[in-house]
Length: 416
Image (cartoon, rainbow, N blue to C red; front, side, top):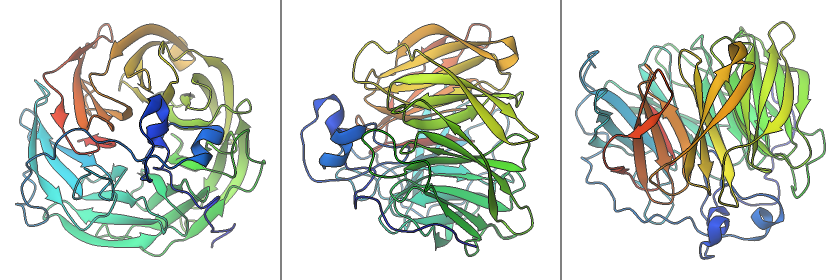
């Protein structure tokens, strides 16, 4: 069942405003996955084109490339890369690579073509199917079978410019967020990994948009640790919405709202492994916050704003990553071009800023840890590179693992 309206708010794309940040030259538009980092009137009024300075990587041919090898615990591991195919200097589809879990060295393995603007990626719990948003005015989501890299088809989200998606832990539902229309959607996942017709869509109609915003801008849609609630982070309304997901019908029922201070612009929420706390990156006012989560009600309580550690401005925090043991958290700082390091204390209830390290790239749009937590990957949009860092388990220190890997307009890195 769909609810809410479907139109694009203000008729603009999520990618168009990235070059405004940090004084890049203004040109015609192209937009982005986890968001462009601009905020308020500056984002609404201009259409700069995102820069991509790195050369295209010499990747093998797309879907015709050989099937994925079965990874061994000590051998190369799969890595998938999101980009904008419509951006100048962008990629040709989903980049396929592998990485050495010991050294962090990345090796190109090809490209899955036929997937336009795959700016954010997610994997099915069984590891067999990859999902991508297609960040365009008519938003769609696409499924790719990894055994032979076959594109299994796309489904409409019902909204505009989807910028995030995730798979419910049950493997039965795909959750997606449409930035342009401020809506979230649910699609069923079949036994083959292919997507069915949308079962739910909700547009964030209340509260009213925050300062400098023309409408809601859903930026993330994820499952809470309890599995029965799903949370939508909306930058435009300064709100995190909690929904109860019907596990049989795939429908959504709103149960709570959590509000940041006006203009904070919440972008991305990451849960601590303990499940009682989460960390929120606010791109609008360059802050982060510790949030308490109640599994029984699905209610999130947002704490006081804290520093991102950024010294250069303007800065737009993008995304948290938390180590599997819950001891450390890392934050991507776009603008400052750093990674902030936090010690996680009091069983997840406190973040203590340890400092920042250079990301060795420009505009880290998204970060992700390898499954064992030993490596951190940063997708640097403007430099067209992926930086890899070794993570010290005892101290949370980050050490660059070799030269950054060239990847056209790198906006998402998904290590498996």
